Image 1: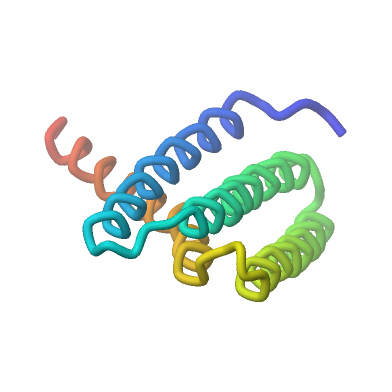
Image 2: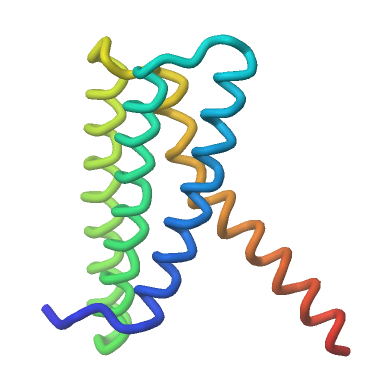
Amino acid sequence: MRAPDRTVLRETGYIALFTLILSALMQAVFLVIGKWDYTVLLGNLLTGAAAVANFFLMGLTVQAAAGREEKDARQMMRASQGLRMVGLFAVLAVGVILPCFNTVAVILPVFFPRIAVMLRQLLLKKEDKNEK
């Protein structure tokens, strides 16, 4: 396996930063509504890290699949997605089952990378409109 290229590292860094920002906002909401305790932090750390790792592994798979024929690349992407989803499900199951994790704080961070990607697309569209 070759080293991750700059694009994978840059995009993963963006996802990690955005996940950190959304995690801080989630922690603040729990604090404001009076429901914050250490289980919120642990749940957030568990799945926030898993979500960023999932994105990074997806980037590595895309990088590896880029040089292959379409059929091989498609099979590689499908297998990777299946394994990554099983991994995320296992992390979520552990987080929901064990009492040291807050269930809501375990589930929400899984969606943070998707939110980051959507917001980035919106920001890029605004930049493109401003350049024209």
